[in-house]
Image (tube, rainbow, N blue to C red; front, side, top):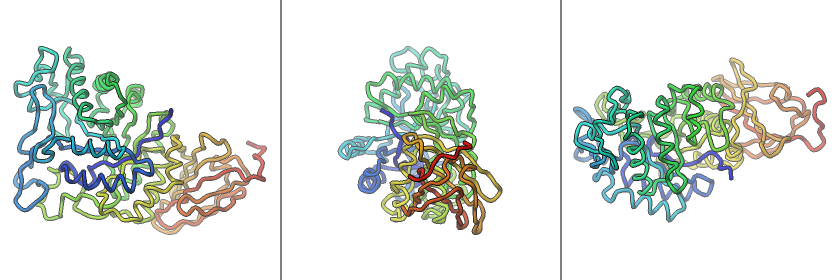
Length: 442
């Protein structure tokens, strides 16, 4: 049975790499109440869970003052990360048990490769006579995260290593894996996908981050369930433009059970760990974007952002701190008409592009007479649009239209005529009017 593109929550936008057990539990109960009933069923802990941090008196979250905040890494004798005791004193069991009780899937972030601490020490690869040092590829270290070396994918122990990592995390109860720095290394994607295939229950695989993608590697990418096609997205207007470019570049590359991922949703309260009083350069060492704040997107920009993701059939992962997320953000995240478009699972096609506005269209896979349209005002002031339905790839002379935001209905005859505020979008579901006939010229 086809699964719609995944919906969930991810800790990075609100907690960077310092999410701890309490942060997750605080968000989990709100997630279950506000998002789970709307198909958001995957709860993901992002990076940093294996790091022991230096602590600053009077601060809940570690910060980088006078150097790296990382004191050490928790790694076992077989070169596999383990949860840091100061962040997760009982491991992941309290989080996983609570997820199971609520009917929620637990997800975890991993980095490609093998821990430097293990490769520079005496760790061995489980089930082999090889050492972590033998397996490490010191020339393929991630340029933005220095925790790991790469893995030599053709080494005899490479498969055994990734098998042991995937088995360990799934034994913990993980249902979803977001693996970073992976898309430039298709051989390692294959090793990880092979390891997941050996597990006796479904494990969803997300490839991250975007950038450095090659269309020639699409057959390998499709061994995963989703593919990030943007670099990190935050609450900046330029990231909306970046998402439009990714939509146009990757349209048509989705398949059933393989989604094109436009990254997380930076709504609600962001960067909770950073109160804005850190020394210059400190936040870069802890990661995350900016200081503690509510999302800086305007209401119109939020509508545009969500319409992009629904029309692209992108996975939807909320990133903000849920206890302090405004009701209006939850209303967007749970809009049933928007979620129906995302669940359609088909990427919209760009049908109009102008300096002032652009339009995307996607047909309803279950109803040949229906579909969705997004008409986006890309100006910073009001814009009126008058365009023929046929030029929007709608082959009906008259369509009944339902506004995704309000639910209000109307009829468009031959043309779409709308006026949009700055940065806003007309997002509608259409269906051939009951009295209308197909255009004979189509």
